[in-house]
Amino acid sequence: MADTLTEPAPRATTTESRTPTVIADGVDIVYRVTGTGAGRGSATAALSRILGRRKHAEHEGVGGVREVHAVKGVSFTAYKGEAIGLIGTNGSGKSTLLRAVAGLLPTANGRIYTHGQPSLLGVNAALMSDLTGERNVTLGGLAMGMSREQVRERYEDIVEFSGINEKGDFITLPMRTYSSGMAARLRFSIAAAKDHDVLMIDEALATGDRKFQKRSEARIRELRATAGTVFLVSHNNKSIRDTCDRVLWLERGELRMDGPTAEVLKEYEKFTGAGK
Amino acid sequence: MSQSQTLCAPVPEGAPVPEGAPDGAPRAVPPDAAELAALHGLTVSNARPALPAYVRQLWDRRHFIGAFATAKLTAQYSQAKLGQIWQVMTPLLNAAVYFLIFGLLLGTSRGIDDFVPFLVTGVFVFTFTQSSVMAGTRAISGNLGLVRALHFPRAALPIAFSLQQLQQLLFSMGALAVILLCFGVPPAWSWFLVVPALALQFLFNTGLAMVMARLGSRTPDLAQLMPFVMRTWMYASGVMFSIKNVLPEHGVPQFAKVLLECNPAAAYIDLVRYALIDSFDAGQLPYGVGVMWALALGWAVVLGVGGFVYFWKAEESYGRG
Image (tube, rainbow over all chains, first blue to last red; front, side, top):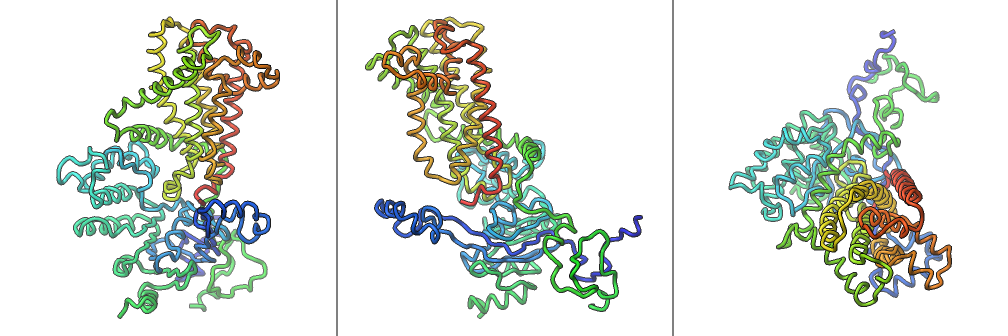
């Protein structure tokens, strides 16, 4: 019985023996944006839009809300053990795509299949600047889905890693009193305290001073070792080259290239003119 | 390469393979995303979990909900010099304004024995619902950053905001107890009936907050509209006058009176007054005590369960903006 159920692995030597962790299948992502449409600010424009709604409804969507097509028909398959870089000029849809993979943004068309629950490295949104660093560590940990015990266990490590207390007892002060560098360090430390199946990092490497950057790069390598798959969004081609073995290049929401780091970066640098 | 692929077993047992595919032909592209996903046990990202699973996820996040509510409450007045004293001062000042206008200037106190306790109880209890609804309306639309950054059952947000209002209410209730004693209302065992009444109101508020959260996530403009709706609701709920005494004098039709008396806010306010204020006896209630409790329970269950299901139905769409 068990013999007949042998894995389909033998037929594949290189590509198909690998376990996929994320499959994106023709993904479209559309944002609805209010408050930016032409003339939206003026009352007469709003009025005429309401009156003329029937006429324009088909073109503009309900109430003249503008739609932004942020990601168009992107398909890729990520495998276990891969570190994938996402590059592209500003506003090319990198962060949007990551959010959709994390299940945080709904897709308009297509589907994204994932192994487990991919998580975005970052807890900024859950933290409150009026609270002390101490309470933010707890709040951030809980927000990422850690239990109270896990937070208690890792509390010391988080504070130590952030180095917040190196210059006095800052962890008991409200976060609004921190310098932007200190706040960024604490945020990274909290976010990096959890192990992930599929980990996505959105330009998190460029925080803090040089010393802290070194430390965070090391931590990301650690996370990479435990995580199944890592996605990294960055504008720093060097950090992409250091950490990733495959690169997806997005431009205007479309997947322009998908391949080994060196190859894609070469084309990308030609495109942006940075390679000279 | 391709040799080894054609030689090896073309069809893995148990795996769905399209009939039309040429046998053993090497394929550069995986057969089909859905098939490949199914083969390796991948699930659709951002799919809405079934209701029981959703409840379980929410229960797993209970510590986050509690911590978030407490954090919001503490952060609220942390920049003020008087700090947490405002937790008590805000509702007291609120009540003082209504006393000035309705008690002293307009004299709606006719036929009410302990007007100040009557008024303050009404204001505090209604404020509980009012602020839960207001916070609920902005629970998703005002926290898009959080929704787009972290994964958690979204119902955690409206629930946390309602919980924050419940904590706020506890401060108000402490202040209320002092006011009652100052105005000569004798303490009684019936005061403990406040607990189930407010628990039911909390359930009702949370359900309503979830309904508003879903509506507000689609139409952020509701946040502008709701203050007016809530103020109308407050004036209609007998916060500063007795519905029973005042409406018949003004020739208000019977059906309107019944409607006002059965409205959930009025029911919760009356139950709390009945529990706390000695002179507010069963004769002041529009219906029998049992009917009032049934009304309070009914509203709580209908909104609590209905609101939760209504919110869950759109779970996957929150965060679209």
